[in-house]
Length: 125
Length: 107
Image (cartoon, rainbow over all chains, first blue to last red; front, side, top):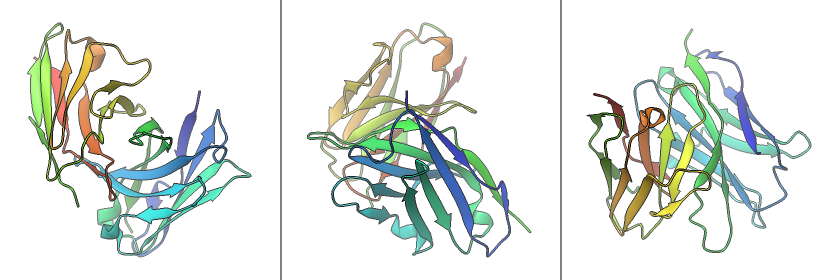
């Protein structure tokens, strides 16, 4: 059974860089065509897709343009981890951050089939 | 970006009831529509993918329908664990976008 677990500091100061890790167990992060996604949810608000990294042939990475170049998603296959960095954070970046997997195959609509429980991040001085 | 409009934003129901939630996309997304179940403190769960396909392990009381721009999630015979928040999501194009959510609570 694939499991995802987000981790990172719960408190980040304004203007600093938020760094989170998603540790995957129960399967290899790179043996297959997967999209590893980050999504966030501010308290009492809706879900916002941050970006995704593809472990298939193209190895492409896509980010939500609304983050204006502040996002970096990377992968460490030796640790079976996906990481998120969000720079120049403000209070508006306070949210629960989720990682989620989508599997790519012929005919797939690439739903997010496994999620972590999320980790709460507060941006405050 | 493709806007996803979900309704209602909340509803009250009783165990055993049938409820329906609708999701409308701002442009055609064909069948690239998925539904998720969210409960506080738990990992979100995929219910329906491709508008109408039931994810493995999801009870058959959940059913999805629709294509193009209009979609529906129906839950029949509500169980206690079904009182949660439901989100639709389009995976037709990036940025991936979600509906605003529908909270189903106990009447």
